[in-house]
Length: 269
Length: 354
Picture (tube, each protein chain N blue to C red):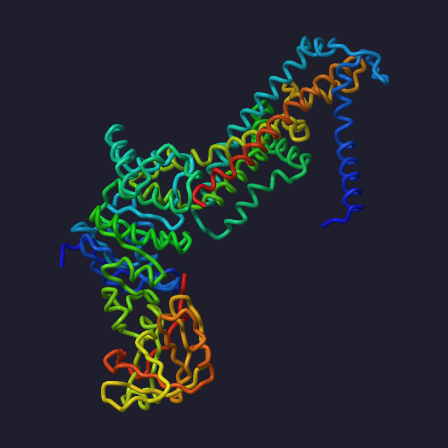
């Protein structure tokens, strides 16, 4: 048991941290409704004017659409490769298995500047490919794979191989077993991995900066480029608020998915 | 003997340098309740997994009926398994679980529903078809697993310690029920357990496994009354080993002998000598109250320590407790002694209870 005083100071400390993290975010959101475009405090009044301007801004709309496309495509690639990698590493015990596992997970920890530079160099100098939407997708997929791989691998570890053995024992071949048993039991893990992956890709800026061509502007890049134009500042606030929401919702959903299904999926135990 | 359901010839399974199953020959008759009994690591579960097709044998053949199934995958063998942890599919209802085997064999919807409901009736879960697995108790899950396997009417049903996760009372009930279900459906049951009482209760025949080999293969009564080795005597029930110098003194013969605790009588004074009775004086070391029985541990003057049990026909054990540290005489009928033949028996294993 914690002493009364200690518990109180921990509560205060937690609150301070939460305030430091979330007040600036709340300010962004509030300022997107602020009538005063120099963001005077307290706000003179509230308006939806900036939201309307942002909605009408072709640049912001294009950037939003680009970001959605990139995030979806990177997630699809991550789903396919991450699941296959987890399945491959699950069955076989070979020398260097842990190394392969580490190599798959590593990109999420690598500094974005390094990954970005390396990809730019790889695409342009070594492969001679022009930067495009696809180069962003490939670069994003390298760290999006991690969320899918980790989720699927954790699910496999929890399920063991008994359910699949039971299915084969009852007469189902390998494909039928995957369709009727393995996949349904992976579904929520895949969804959680996909949502996290979407969230990661959607607000990524560092790697994107190095792998995007000048025509492909994702939302974070658009924000960065319009940040220092005084007349765009209120719209940037709106876009930033949208970005926060778009990134937070998938994370929230993913967390609920992996939490609520934990009991139901352990099955027999 | 009836027709053969399973026939194993020279079956081996090595994991690295460990011989989990070592050159095994075994025939299991059609319709038999056959148990494989042994401590963990004795190879009994590996034999079951080899029959099911989850492991590939290092050598030997597996014949099911008159088909050689050694090289067939698990889904192409006419056997079904009840797993130790049941492995009931959590994303399907109870009925869908039971239907699964028929579904993947493309049995029509109406037919498979009917048969699944019948199977649930057989395990007395007729009302539970719509439930989800997580809404069931351990004993109910065990029955679902049984119904899921039985619905396919396999040639052989393999059961991998299916009662291990249940509490003692439920386990005893399920033992009786399993035996009844087996008689009802007439399918060959191959039952793996490390619980000797479970094996004795249910089986037609029992194979006692030790280090990848069968130590003894016999009906329950013979296994208990005539153990073939010190290992079997020690693993199946409690037994007292009398060997070497003690055997010369007490039995009057060279060799190793086993006497069961309930066959020994505890007396205050030596009876009149008789060629049919063995007599061994000693000192009571411990008196243990076990509910239905009282167990008395006696250190014989001849050396070994012998456990004696007798039923508690009185409502107190004060009289028995008073014997602690007293001199007593143990007697038993010579015909109850089991000779293990070998004058230098292996040490008996630790007794394992579940």
